[in-house]
Amino acid sequence: MYQCSETNKTRETFCDIYFEMSLKKILLGTVFLRNRYIGLSSVSTITDKKYRFDESEGFLFRTKGKILTAAVFSSVLIGAAVNEQIKDKNVKSQSNDVVIEAGEKLPDLPTYTAEEVSKHGDKNSFWVTYKHGVYDVTKFLPSHPGGEQIMNAGGLSIEPFWNVYGMHKTPEIYKLLESYRIGNLHDDDVIDHSDDELWVKEPVRDNRLIVKTAKPFNAEIPAKYQIKFFDTPNELFYVRQHMPVPELDADDHRLKVTVKGSKIRTEEFSLRDLDKFRRVTTRAALMCAGNRRSEMNEQVKPVKGIGWMGGAISNAVWGGVYLRDVLLYSGVDPEDTKGKHVIFTGADIDATGVNFSTSIPLDMAMNPSSGILLATTMNGHPLPPDHGRPLRVVVPGAPAVRSVKWLQSITVSEDESPSHWHQKDYRAFNPSKTWETADFATAPPVYSLPVTSAICDPADGDVISVKNGAVQVRGYAYSGGGAKIVRVDVSADGGRSWWEARELQADAAPPQQHYGWTLWTASVPVATQQKEVELWAKATDSNFNTQPERFNDIWNIRGILSNAYHRIKIKLVH
Image 1 (tube, helix red, strand yellow):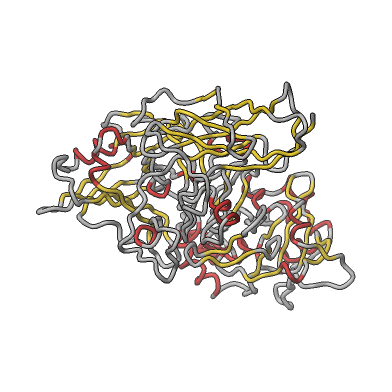
Image 2 (cartoon, rainbow, N blue to C red):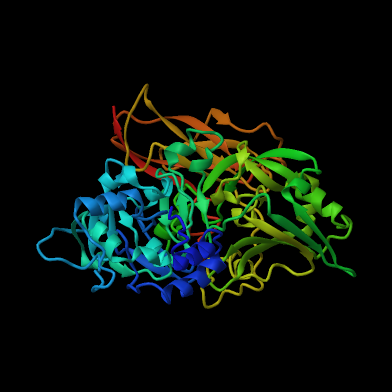
């Protein structure tokens, strides 16, 4: 990372702004930089053009296939490596001369698409882009002083970072960058990307995740890893963000609890203060309400939202204290819950300064069997930044949107959360409602999830060897509201016959308090003459609710609660 110099007051001021970075400081700092540093057009790269703007989500997303999106450098081309490279190439400072622009389109160089560049993102071959330029900086990596986040930019663009840290836009740095030039970026892959200063401090993510959107970052876990681990490793747990990830210090973080009534009572807790409450652990799967949305979109008609496949669900053991205990301590009357709500507000904010917020009914929060946590750990480790460090709510059995991350305040009120995410999203409509006729104000908020399942292995389109006249099928099943999975059935003949999964791996918690998922394995007979088969899977929970057969009957404009039979086609080798 850049080190502040006492001889450079401009850079010193810059460091004062950014080393304790928050979104508001970023916004103010960007104005500061634009007044003091060279202004360049801000552009970035995407791998293809199969994107559209989603008004309800507020960002671009791909409607089909894997997305490869722009990420950022955590550090810059400076330090010892800069001096060495400049020395080797006899590059001299030209601060009093014409500014050298990096990334201009040059003749007689090969042209690469962003998709081609994206294939060079590891330590063996590390390419980046800047405006029209494509650069192979593999040899520079060992000398890079900035830490592991540089790997976020592999095969992508460095411009988002440079748009914030404007002191890199100097003749020396431009010349250094150009010394690694290998080609031009295809014109179609150069786009404006002026808001990247909001995203430069994003956490490092595991490259096994399937990225759906980059800003905000949303990614699902591949199916093969869902069934490999009963408790999903933290780095593979699916990620759902609405805004940039805030930077919070666990030692300084405070939770404010406000109880509104005839009198207003307020309590404030540090994380250490929360330790006075009994600490507990709960195994719970978190699932986005839009999990499996892509199937509804493809099998019926288009919906608005991220094109999740089946990977927007993961399982973990959460550690913390019960929300109920904290609310009781803060003065909530457990006998006076009717018509009241608990509003959770996170520290994540959008560019206008609005914090993320949603709410749940107070009677749900005060129900001892709900098991709602104020969590500080995940699978025995402190919460990762992507999952709410240092404090989040975990509302088991509810859509994951209710499990607010980076929790900074709780308000008990007669009003629901006024936020867009609560008032204008995550509400249920029938299949006939359109965006023109839907009335969000009267639609019920979704506080629980229906029974669902998915086949994880084999994958759609796989070629499978038949053994002893059958194929082995594995997947997950889950139901909200504390219901437990009691059966998973698989059919290979269009539902004429069903084969029950004989291996169910589940938490020991009883029905009504069962919040984890269930992993299952089924042996499904197939006919000897069959060359191809369509497998159907459906689950039944302890309330004896079963998945519906068709998406047509549950289609809705937001594509949520998408839980019809899961179907895949595979080829057979006998």
